[in-house]
Length: 218
Image (tube, rainbow, N blue to C red; front, side, top):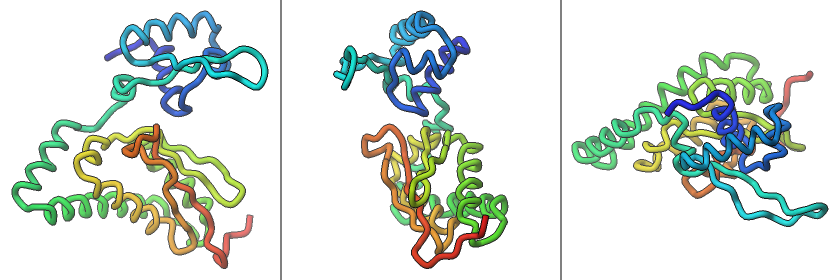
């Protein structure tokens, strides 16, 4: 579905930042609130967004937020969804659970090999590794980002281009976690805090330095 550029920007903002008000969208996208309302009304008619009930604020009037619907989330690319589902089913029939698991592990091994070649650098520079990983995931369509925390980082994936695969084979998520840990090395502790398939709007991992690990001096 092709949309006007500004409507695409609104969907992207709701995808990466979660539910937002008209006023916040207006500031972020540098559009008038009236323009935002018109675009949201059009997107609502298309079934791509919906308005949440107004919430009370500490000060001022209640604020209504807008969020993506399932159809809105599906507007973002989902690489070969139907083909992926069929391939997993075929692998299950032909080789059983072990065959599906081996297929996922081989796919992850290839991705990890590609990432590792692009992440070459000092083994103890965890910050650089996280930045490289975020850029690589974004290039692969995961709309990744990173936020600095008091004791580390929060790696966020706002989109999952292989969501259909993961829904049909949870091994994809488990394999992804192992890959992150292997790439970031023994000096990093990685813990998943948000999981798209568990009902969260995104996937996210908290990354921190392991006690005693030495970080490269700035």
